[in-house]
Length: 290
Image (cartoon, rainbow, N blue to C red; front, side, top):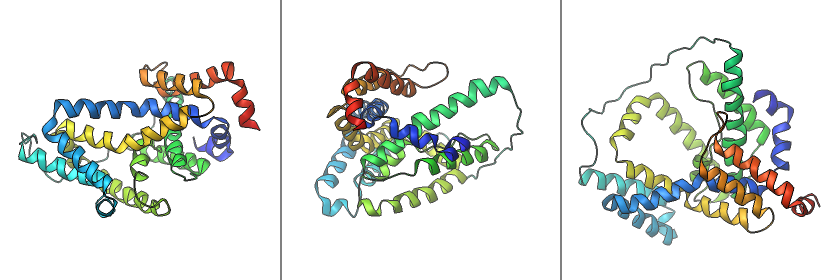
């Protein structure tokens, strides 16, 4: 990832990929968040309904929503409802606990390079980062693609020392960052999230237990509400103009969520969408180049 970002190949490949097909893939990834939200509303109405109601209220009244973002209001109400209804699992005590990193000595292996490195690199650059780039572009931002890819490579090297996951520009997190507020001020949300990520990382055992103690419907509802606007934008961008068939195929293959060769369905959805558009929508490519 570090080398590919430094060469500029990732940016060129991203610019050559039609945005409707990318957003079709994004819609397929985010679809489950919306579906889970609807299911949670029927299965756990006592917690989910107040969260949705507060989210709607804060979204409908901008004067209040600017002081308390809708997603934060939903979180607070959901937490209160979970406490009132006794839905937090208190079987294990919650206590502050810092992480205890374990340094991992590298062990080189051709099999690992083929089975792990290649699928992970594809997942980060083509699936996760592509979602983040698409979300930011749809919100009017211009993400530095090569710089982000280089940062992901450096972050992956650093996190590997402690056996952590690869660094990536995730779609859901960026969707929350650009969900509200003035576009020119949304960078402050990114800074705050970075600081919170450090705090959450240092106290990972505590926050992991807290999430496990919270009702699943609360977490699902928060994710679904945060993704609604992005899901709407993804559908509009994917199916409003050119490459609609390729976008549909990308959406269906991604939504089916069937991995292949240790690579997630989102990559194959993007690849399938490009192939279908190249075969059946060549006039759209001609219009794109002009």
